[in-house]
Image (cartoon, rainbow, N blue to C red; front, side, top):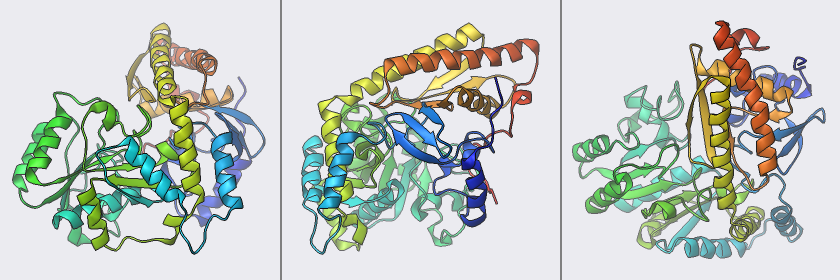
Amino acid sequence: MEEIQTGSGQKLYNEAKKIIPGGTQLLSKRPEMFLPELWPAYYSRAKGCRIWDMDGKEYIDVSFMGIGANVLGYANDEVDAAAKEAIDNGGMSTLNAPEEVYLAKKLLELHPWAGGVRYAKAGGEAMSLAVRIARAYTRKDIVLFCGYHGWHDWYLSANLANKNALDDLHIPGLEPLGVPSGLAGTNLPFHYNRIDEFNALMEKHKGKIAAVVMEPIRNDYPEDAFLEKIRKATKEAGVVLVFDEVSAGFRLCAGGSHRVLGVEPDIAVFAKGMTNGYPLTAIIGRHDVMDAAQGSFISSTFYTERIAFAATLKSIEVYEREKVWEKQSAYGRLIQDGWKEKAEKAGIELEIGGILPMSHFAVIGEESPLVYKTFVSQEMLKRGYLASNAFYTSYAHSEAIIREYLENIGEVFAAIGECMRKGEKVEGLLQCGVCQSGFGRLN
């Protein structure tokens, strides 16, 4: 199979690195995270689950689908029509857009435990807003957290007191540069399904804790009533329980994953899972907790723009009507079972994880998992796929697309298995350097 040629996207990316610190606005979209020097980097058009690069070459996206933002697929006709109608009627004015009220009613209908809604634009920003509201409500400072929740000061401050606090929770090497040193000790981590760590922190900081912030689910399902125990402890202590539904929301059902898991928080935060690519986030919560937002200054002009509200309302409508969560999980099961079957046939070992709509794998071998990940991206790109070691399912995928993808990745697994049997290095087959795992300076 012929080698990958450097295209217009990589040439533009080399220009970007000179004038955009870090090269891109989102770490997860850096080409170095996939295939250094060879990843297409930029797109000219996207539709369904297909993307065309700047040279017009077509790929099927079997990786992250807009980093999880396009649950219905790219450029969904109904959602985009709603957005275009909002544009035609004026996306911004001195008066407020009624759609923000309609969307609030819909979110509260899906989550009867909640009584108030505020909006923002980005997931990390919304999490910061949720923490502000929790602190305003409790008049306390300390936050206990589990998992990844964005880039803002409240979160990165965990690495002030312990420079390795975030290493195994999301991305290693995150320096809290620019985060005020006075925040040290205000944000303390515990691990998922480790109720002993949580209980120890609750006891040590009794009476000082404002909130517990966590994803109700991400890679693993809760064990031994983990969420129920946290809910009980926070309620008894008067601590606000915040569920980060930025990634898991609108994957397992219409609304928060906590609806399926059976535990209600005090605040839940939604973002990309509900909007199909439009910039809007929602912070919903119990009425008394959300009322605390009035005592803290939270206000922004673009929180009121109309287009994303209209698109999100239509996105939720389509999601419910088509019961998209059922397809997301069915496709995820097909993918995980397919990975297992192809790996066994190739004689290699995989570690497979993630909830079904957000599946991922790692090849187990003598070389770094990043070597294998890079090789998969390289070989699948040659076959016309944007692929990595993860597959976020969408309504735009199909069983036929997935089965063809599995045949192709099976061939890549076979090549890895052949190298292993011969005692050769997969790294020797790479056309580029090994991909990065997380934060790193690029220029």
